[in-house]
Image (cartoon, rainbow, N blue to C red; front, side):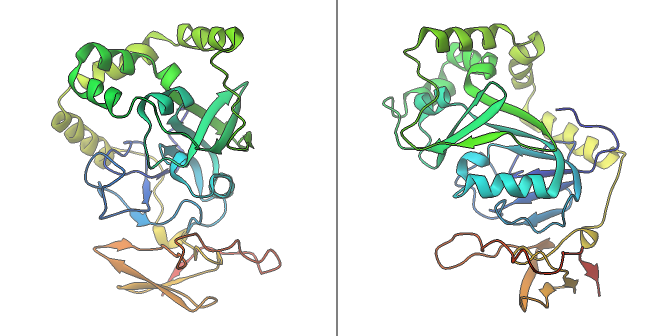
Length: 296
C-alpha cells in the first residue's frame, strides 16, 4: 500500500486486525464476531457504520484501506461509490475467484477478479465442491498453509486505486475467469511468478511471530504514529442524508432527518438500516451539499 506519512487513513471493516497505518476505524459489527477471526479492536477512534452508507463528509480521507469487506456487501457498487466519495486513494483486498472455489465461504455475496487492471464483480451463485476440506488443511497441514501464504497472487485480489476505482458489475453467470482456457491459466501462472520475494514469503515470515507479540508491537506503533489526526466531530455526517450533525455526550443528532444515533461504549453507532437490513437510499441530489459535523 502506497500510504504517505502525511495521509489521513480510514480502515473499513477493521475488525480484529486493523493496520497500524489507520487513524480511524469503521466496522459494521462491533459485538458480533461471526464473520471475522476474533474480537473487535478499538485502540483508536472507531465508528459503527455500514460501508454502503458511510457517515463521513466528502473526501475526508487521503487513503482508505478496505480489506475483505467488499465481498460481503449487499450492494458492492454502492459501496464502491462510497469509497470514492469519502477517500482520494485506497486499497481493496478480497479473496479471488480461485480462493472462493477452494474455500467456499458461505457468507460472501460476491466473487471478484482483477483482470487487466479492472475489478470485475458478480453475485456469488456457487458453493465450493470441497466443503470444509481446505479450511481443515489450512489449520492442520503446515505444507498446505505455506502454499496458501506464498500464493497471494493467486488467492487474493489486491487492487490499489487513485481517484477512481475501475470496476465492472457482471451477471452471476458471466465468469471472466475460464480456468479451462490455456491463456487464462498462463496469465495466472505469470502473475504468481511476477510476485516479489517479499510478496511471496512475507506472510509466512509474519506467521512465525506470535500473535501476542504482533498485537503488542502494533499497539506501540499506533500510540507513537506521527502524522495527521482529526477529531471525528470534524468529519462525521449523517449516513442517511450526509447533512451536518450535532454531538452530545450520549448521541449524535441529525436535525434534517430528525434521527438520533447513540454513542455507546465510547463508540458512535452511525448505523442506519431499514427493516430489510438494506442501507438507506442515496440522498436527494438536489439537497444542499453536506458539511462536516460540529460539536455542540
